[in-house]
Length: 326
Image (cartoon, rainbow, N blue to C red; front, side, top):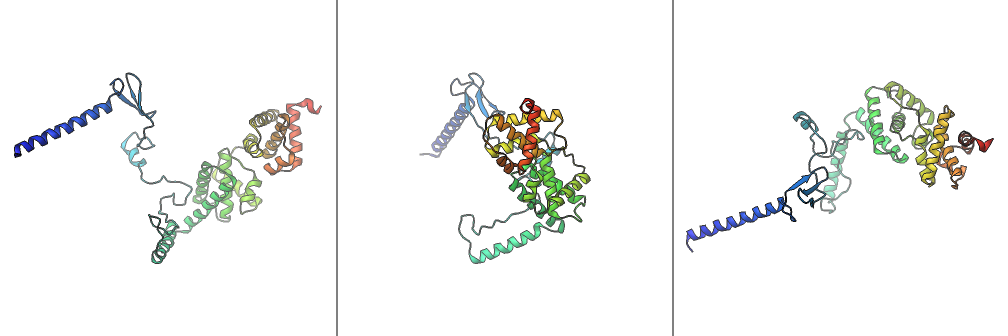
């Protein structure tokens, strides 16, 4: 076969390949049913035919960033690589973390020399992560906040808010003369109140390493100095948690909320513990909806005495069902 024939054959093969690719591209851009034009619906992640409405592709992966930018300065400030920063870690999660497993990327155990080397690296890495006393203080406090929040079942948003409050207290030099655990507990208590997930002082005292008196004193000091806007606790915020722990149905929760709203309108909630009012409302609602629950069970869940429940639930029922006690 001559050189000219070979070149012609190769050119013909190239043309055939290009035609095949163009045909596949046309098929991709056209509807397989009616050969209509396809458009991409980015809002719903679908590729749809404009003529017949056939959904050719769905659940498309959005490979763009989760943030929006309207100019180059915003784009440069928001762009990042790696995991997002978080206020829940003293270094905001930007430092290197060396795992404790003595295995390589393939899951094989490290040799004795490699294990000693990794241990030295962990030691030095831990030293460099906390460069001064302020960072050591912050690391201990944020660990304490995370521990208490986990014990109380508080969500991530509350932990983030508590971390911000503690950082503000540390920056404004409010810690001298007060324990790290006390300020951390006060920050978490204030964050839970602010985010609508309040817990009682007794619940905090059960998981905190400081006494209840110190916790309340530190909480008032932090709120006053940082000028935090903390609204009085609403008894209704405790109701869903009590109902869930007692395994009661939604009807009890609705009735309990109704009782508390009636008591609030009558003005009998002022000066009374919101935890006691919420527990009494749940008990009274269970009675009104024929649900079996005892004062002792409600008291154990809310961590209050049965006497408090008896006194409060009678007041609630007198407001909403006055004829029961006439």
